[in-house]
Image (cartoon, rainbow, N blue to C red; front, side, top):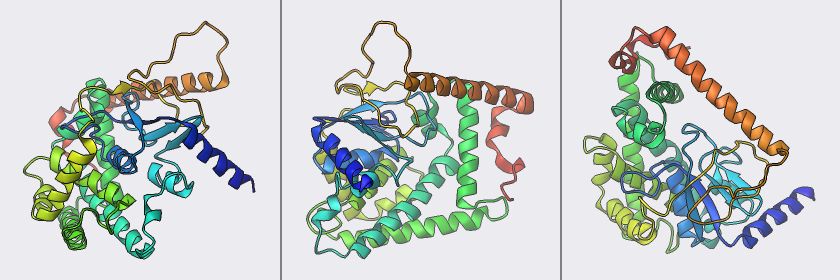
Amino acid sequence: MASAAAAAATAAEWEAAERKVLVARKPCFGLPTACPTSLPVLLYLRLAQVPFDIHVDTSFPDADHIPYVEFGDCVAFNNEKGGVIEYLREEKILDLNSKHSGVSPTDVLSTKAMVSTWLADALQYELWVVTDGSIAQDIYFSDLPWPIGKILHWKKTRDVKQLLGITKLNAAEKEEEIYQKATAAYDALSLKLGDQVFLFDNSPTDVDALFLGHALFVLNALPDTSVLKGTLQKHENLVNFVEHHKVQLLHDLSSSSGLGSSPSPSSSSTPRKRASAGQSYKPKPRAKKERTEEEKKFRRRSKYFLAAQLVGVLVFLSLMGGVDSSELDDDDGIDYED
């Protein structure tokens, strides 16, 4: 009973909010946000024709709660309840799939799983393992001091290798497996799409948003030497599908203007009041007063983050002070096996 009341209150907040705020990572490569996680959320809102503002968060580049959507006094974080899109669907706030009564839910789920696993893994592999690191640097770490950005990149690369199960001994086999699955996924999506405007019937689903976000990043951000990009480009109907919706959905979203900067967010799931929608995302000046518990909590977390960065730099300098950057990029000395 209480959960139903909470869901109703959340839905009411959504309806009452004239414009929502999507907090994402910064624009790059001609895209309004170059983050592979943020793009699908942005596209989902656009496909649903929801008015929203985009604000950029550069304070915590590796935070897993980005992207998030603020509406009224509520926040939908990426690292809670299956992500922003799933949260909006589960709370019955915004569900594109509900319009497809004639489509098998199993078909939608299986296609979604393919995009969310096989294609997502392949993209992570190319972004963090295969490329030289410059793309990830532009998206995530360019606003940080070099040592901190370098350490965070190295850590993320290590995490991705562990997630994908890549070790020194099986690297070649894992790469072949990753690309085989990606090829199979593109083949299946191309067959399903045919000459349609959307993957299912004549209206969008969350799968369209997920695949469009993936494909837009692959085609616009990855280099021409990318195996994943070359594989996708073999499917003319998929490329046309992406280009068509890029024009339709992103035509009025500039990659260089109209984007506000977000203050450092709290990773707490506690609902909070968002800033008013507009071109600026700076809080209004106010008279000095006793800080609220939320403000104190935020300041503590900011200090912890800065302290962690400082510790990371000290560890980097003490343990790897004699290693140049080319050696840091070489993972031959790192054992990813348990």
